[in-house]
Length: 409
Image (cartoon, rainbow, N blue to C red):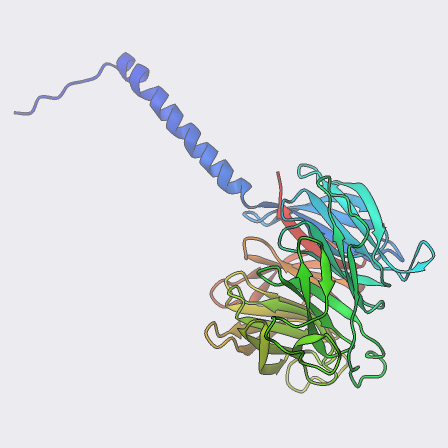
């Protein structure tokens, strides 16, 4: 016969209720922590010739897909591309203008980020050392900002001090080489994108005017860029003395931006002028070999189009590009072993002239900046296929051209 002991209610309350309360507290705290992980700030760079005043901010909850406008984060001229430092304390913007303080140059602006409010506090501004800066990134240490000047046809490096302020350029390097055949768009070198190599010894520069992705040495101790060979045993790969061309594209491709696979084995270069993606294999020591060239447009489309942005999904399975003219996002499936692409479909961007687009940090949503319809459209990404579905959310932002996410406080 089994004897059961009945615990008096007073003892039960004394012993077990505090334990249950403690478990409930930890459960609530864990849920809150998980929810916090999916809350972000979204900064939007714009052109300011008309209605816009500068950089705008939103709060985004990826768990609920809720967007909350935070208003004008900082007033500044033509912040056409943005970058957030690795420590997420500072935001940097290129000011895409042709004249700065009487010189043929644009500017670069530094801001401190308030992660609670999304407001940006101006720190300082320096000359970009070339007209119409259009892209900014950091070296792998986060101690230097790297800038591509489109009309200036050059690239520059800028030291960043511990307070986030920019110093004067530590290095300026002119792109050089044979021009592409498109006389209207390839009249001179046009640096359009810059990014450091994984080991920080080189930087890559997509030059629209030269139909090449250039590779330069980078000295992270001095912040200097130099033309030269990729290794002591290597020989220059072009007739331009001291310049190593890491990747040569078909004539009139007009390379604009590029993306790398997570393992660094493949580089995907977007051609603005011919709306193509060229796939390169990084065989050894930054020597890139062309594998594939594929159109980002549907078969039979012949109207004018300028490709704008290229982004790999965080899972590495899908690649997206934007088409200004066809006004679509192109989806490609990525062969993870061969690196090659298969065009899957096109998705209307719910607006005109899609420029920059960004995948949110969770990989669940894709945001498109439709420059000429003054809007940002939000799409949900099918994780099993990469396909896009409109969420119906359309944000009004005057002339949006650049998007950047970061975790909110």
